[in-house]
Image (cartoon, rainbow over all chains, first blue to last red; front, side, top):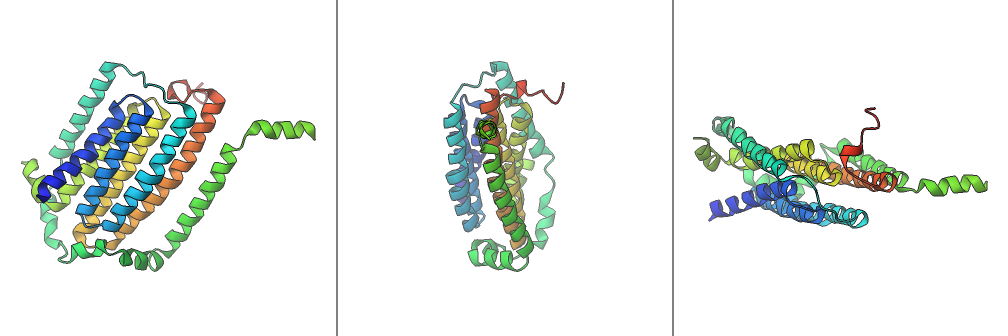
Length: 172
Length: 107
């Protein structure tokens, strides 16, 4: 049963990603990215990283994707005019990439001897993330906060209309 | 031979979809002409990286991989906000978001 769930989420993640490359139109691409994100979230939950799986659904599928769809709304959904042979070429490249990844897959089984016995419990408890974030990773958390602030100010600066500024200068 | 390995080894089991997500994103970022699609592909690449980090974290019982996946999520959110603002601005200025016409610096 778990194998079946694993394969289902795997197929969701990978085929959704392929759909982003293949489908026509931005909204369809965003929806197939949603399928991919949900598949990834499912895989995370299979790894018992429940907290990150939940964050994946709420942050990615909730916020990032809505942002994408919002921008598509501003720009207008127009069809991607790429030719059929190009799509087939991309598909062939994708299959080739999969074959290469599967073929040159490193023999990871030999590293599994060092596997931690209580490996599953560490990621599943949200408390561990909090402890780790506010002790070992205190400085990165601060830097991430500064980065988010800088991004916010940058977005405001970029999306400010320059036309109004020029008009103001003329009136001055 | 590798197929059996992917099914049985729990690390490889989750590393394969991660690598495939990354490969798909890379293909799209290289070959697509549309800025929004390219952006989605970059998101897919970040997702693949996150999944790989979590695979190693859950394999070795180390919380650091999970925390780094957390940070990747932060970076992705900031990147999407800034990138989409730039795309919107570019659309207002240029009237198109195809990379075909973006050769101003190349000329």
